[in-house]
Image (cartoon, rainbow, N blue to C red; front, side, top):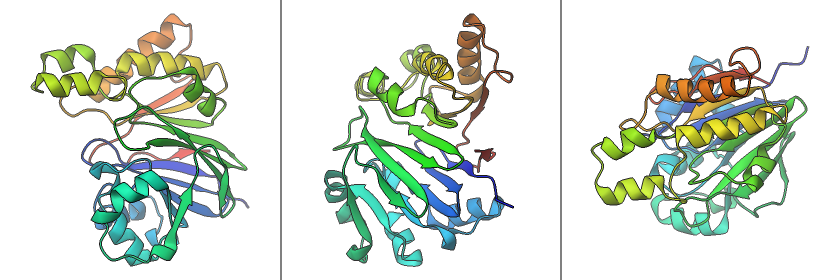
Amino acid sequence: MKQPGMVCPLRSGSSGNAVLIAADGTRLLIDSGVACRTIEQAMQAIDQDAASLDGLLITHEHTDHVASVGAMMRRYKLPLYVNEPTWLAMRPGLGAIDEGLVHLICEGSPFCIGSLSVTSFATPHDAVAPVGYRVESGQGAVTLLTDIGEMDETLLQHAAGSRVVLIEANYDPMMLMAGPYPAQLKQRVSSSVGHLSNEDCAQAVGLLLETGTEQFVLSHLSKENNYPELALLTVGRHLNRLAARPGRDARISVARRFAVSDPLCL
C-alpha cells in the first residue's frame, strides 16, 4: 500500500528554519537553519530518519536558513541544491565539504530529485537571490512562500493549486510599530524586501483558496511582533468575510518556532 505524502515544518522563524517534504519514496529538506542534532531529533519525532534524506534545497543565504548546511552535508553526504549567487554567498561559512554534492539550479527550470519535481522561483527579500520552491509529487504539490516582502500575482501563480502552501505571516503591523525594534529594522521588516504581514498573508490565503489549496501553514512568525493566535485570528477573519470557514473550507495551522509541527498529509 502506498504511503501518503507529508510535509512538516521541523522549525520555523528567525531562530531557524527547516521543512521536510516526504512523498513518493523521496525525502527533501528545505533549508537547514538549526543544528544538525535538532533536525535529527525533529525527524525522529515524526518517525523519519535524517539519513534517508535525498536532497537539501536552500531558499537564501541568511543564517536562520543555512546554519547547519555544512554539517548536514558532511554527516550524510547530502546533495545540495542552490542557485549560484546564493551558493557563492554561503560557501565561505560551510567549512570543508565535498563540492561534488553541490547542484547549481536555475530559477524557473524544473529539475528532479528522486521521484519529485522541483521548481524554484524568485522572491522579494533582502538576500542575493532568494527563492521559493514548488515541489510536485504524484499526491499533489507543496509550495513554500516565506521570507517575502510583498505578495504579487507571479508568486500566487507559482503556488496556485498546491495541496499545501507554507506561507509567511511574520508580523502584526501595530505590534511592529509599537515594539522594541529600532526604526531602521522596523522599516526593513515592513519593506517590499522584508517580510509578509498577517494582513497580507490573509489576503493571499483567500486568493489561493480559490485555486483549490485547502491546507495552509502560517510560517516564520516573529517572536517580538506576532503570536500564533493573532495570526490565525487575522487570517480567519479575512476568510469569514469571504464566506469561507477555517476548518471547513481550509485547514490552517501555525508552524512552531522551537518544536516540530504537526505533519500535514498530501
